[in-house]
Length: 157
Image (cartoon, rainbow, N blue to C red; front, side, top):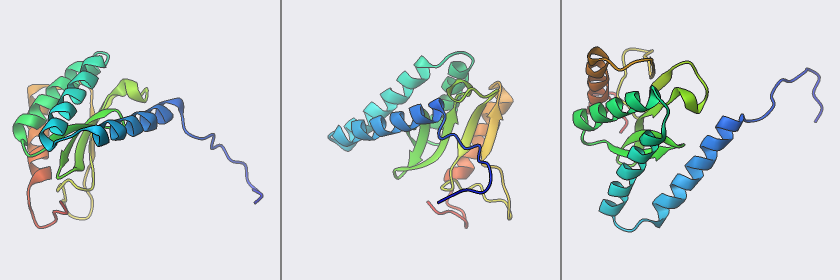
């Protein structure tokens, strides 16, 4: 098949390939675990270990985001998703923390999947840039996560 236009696509970046490799490793680890309780405990340890490996200021933000999510939405279970801390309900990712250093971006991101019940009309935000986690930001994250797991009329979880 020949192309008549010029293409600038060069494939996946090194960071994207590394994230995919981490995801595959996470899946292999999860498959080897025995009981559900063992899996949940190990996934929690994996998330905390990944957060501990992060550079500042990502580490401090991830620690605070983790604390807010686990306190505000205890139904969510921490696990790694493409090498990033993520939080799942019934095995499906609802939200995740993407450190700035992972993809060399200027801000960290708190992202929500289509499983999150954040519906607001015909358009709503599912990603939030984080440069600092203040008390006000913690309150907003807590409210978003609680809404994300609520069983409202648009819930698909």
